[in-house]
Image 1 (tube, rainbow over the protein chains, first blue to last red):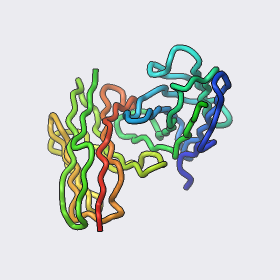
Image 2 (cartoon, rainbow over the protein chains, first blue to last red):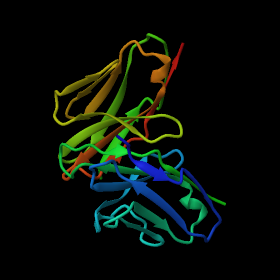
Image 3 (cartoon, rainbow over the protein chains, first blue to last red):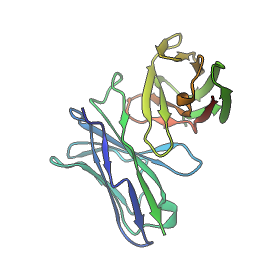
Image 4 (cartoon, rainbow over the protein chains, first blue to last red):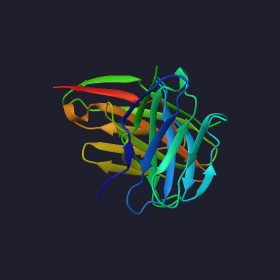
Length: 115
Length: 110
């Protein structure tokens, strides 16, 4: 029973390039969440998606960041024109359903380094 | 704004030396309190969910408890493999948006 999968595990981008982070939820899970962990800080919620729908993007920076979860394929977190401050670990989590009894299970993360 | 404060920031124990980690929270209408374990370079691993004051859950050497203002993660007779960062998170209203504390880095020496 595969867990949440993320790729790439490590990503290096130069300032101004685009970064694409992919997340495949656990089998049977249809809810995906993205979190960011900056050095010396806790995990911060970014966005919550269901298939073909963005439910809550209140934690996403207003510019350069976007997320999608298409009908087929993984969820994508896209960062355009990356800056050094985007360097962080990005974690994806999934749950079976939204609701009080369904926990979020996390993937191994993508470590983004902007040079 | 929801707040989660974990203490201590770091804890060093000898193997077999029991102790507790604290998670205090300020949230309007707590829905759930979650404990995760995170090893270096890995994603958080789910441990427990607690929903109401007085609730307790156990798993091997770990026991989580919840009051109206804080949660404790008790570690009984820890082993070196229990070394990790332990994260606490809360949710309110809808379950999906977790607010995390900064974690407690636990080191268990043999």
